[in-house]
Amino acid sequence: MILPIYKKELITYFKTPLAYVFLALILFFTGVIFTTGFLFRANQNFPLYLRILTTLFVVIIPLLTMRSYSEEFKNRTDQLLFTLPVPLLSILIAKFLASLTVFSVIIINLFLYLLVLQRFGTPDWPHITIAMTGFILLGTSLISLGIMISSYTQHQLLAALMSFITILTLVILTSLTPIIPHSWSATFLTFSIIIIMQTQRLYSKTRKKVLSFFLFLSLMISLLIWQQLRSDSFTNFIPMFLQNYSPLIRYQSFNQGILRLNDLIYFLVFIAILQYITYLNLEKHYYKER
Image (cartoon, rainbow, N blue to C red; front, side):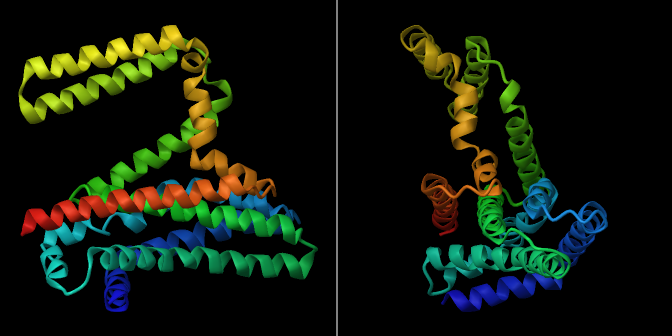
C-alpha cells in the first residue's frame, strides 16, 4: 500500500508551485555555479562543486519538506490517511520516498554536469563517486530532519523556518568548529541554556513550580559534578561533539575522497533515528485523532 500514497504525494508536489520553485532554484543556482566557477575556468574539482552546493541545502531542504506533514495536519487530510487500511510505517516510507524522488532531480542534474566534465577533461571518478555518495547521504539526512520538523507543526511556513534555522545553525557551527573555544565556560553556558529551556518547558506543561525547580537544581548540580569529575571531557565537549556528530563534518570525509565505514554507518543511523522520531510523532497524532 506504499505505492498509492507515494503517487499521491508526488502528484500533490507538482500540483502546487512548490515543486516548480524548488526545481527552478536547483537548475538556476547549480547551473550558475557550475558554469561560472568550473566550466569557464576549466576547473575539474567536482567534489569542491558539491561542497559549495551543500550550502544551498539551507534553502532547498526547508522548501522541499515543509509540507510533508504540516499540510496534512492543517487540512485535516491526515484523518483520511489514518482511516486507510495501511500501517503508519507505510505512510512514513511513502512520504519519505516522495521527497527523495524530488531531491533526485538534483542528482540527475549533477550527472549531466559530470558528462560535460567528461567531454572536456578527465575527472577523478573514484574521488567523485565517494563525494557523490556523501552528498546523497547528507541530502537524505537533512530531508529526514526537515520531515521530522514538519511532523511537529501544522503550519508550513513555521516548519520551513524551523528547518531553515536548524540547518543554518548546523552550517555555522560546523564552519566555526576549528575556532570554538575549548573552555569549561562555553560548555557550562550551553548546557545551562538547555537546562533552563527544559525547565521552562516542564513548568509550562505542569505549572508546578516545586517540580520545575527541583529539575533545574538537580540538572545544574549534575552539570557541576561532571565538571569536577571529568574536567577534560567537560572542557572539550562542544568541539568534540560537533566533530563526532555533525552530519556536515562527517560529509567532509566523503568530499575528500575518504570512504570510512563508521561515517557510512553514522549517516544510516542518523536517518533511521530521525525517521523513528517522525514515526513516534505520527503515532501520537494518530491516537490523538481517534
